[in-house]
Length: 259
Image (tube, rainbow, N blue to C red; front, side, top):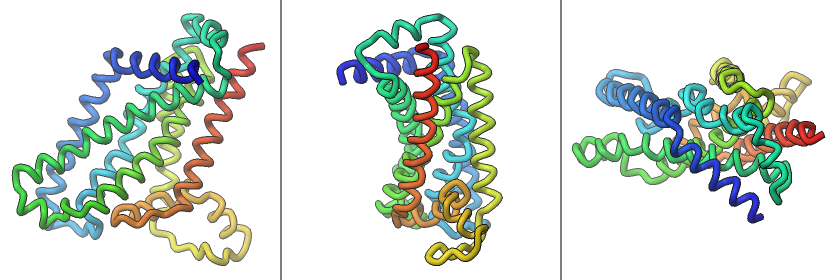
């Protein structure tokens, strides 16, 4: 367990001193803030039926392919390039503990960026309190549901990034692979958004397959539940399975590198 905490502290330190992390975070938050500003300004003229806060959550989710690669691409690719992975493997921590420590560091940094992004509506609330209340920013369930949704998908997104980084020695290749996988993931979610499915009694192979796919193709539909504070436990479970799946693949890859 001490080895796991050492890996976690080391990875967090590496993320906090990496210039690329700060540059990516700055541009990501800047673009997100500008988009949120214009959305709120024109909210009355839109047909957005969810709470305005959910627009920021959706923006963070779809912007993840531009941020997550910078958090995860160095995790194993850089260690392999520098030849320091063998040293880490000799530490008193197993392969899964090594993968878990690097993944947790990336996830914590992702959640930190998400918290910074959620400062935008807080600043608006401070500057224009009456307008913020009219927009529903005083509804605590919207904040809690949105952050749980972000944390859940952030866990699976960073797990994909850790897996991609374990496949190569090149940071750029790891980053592009992560970007591609996450973009495909979000494309499937967007393509299937709004499709009605009767999950209680799936009829036929196609509907059964859709139920098994879970949040992979129903994530945006379930985001509407989280946006109003309704926690969908099936989405949490499915995202946990996806996270564990990619972390297991990364662990198997690290185990192969030992031999």
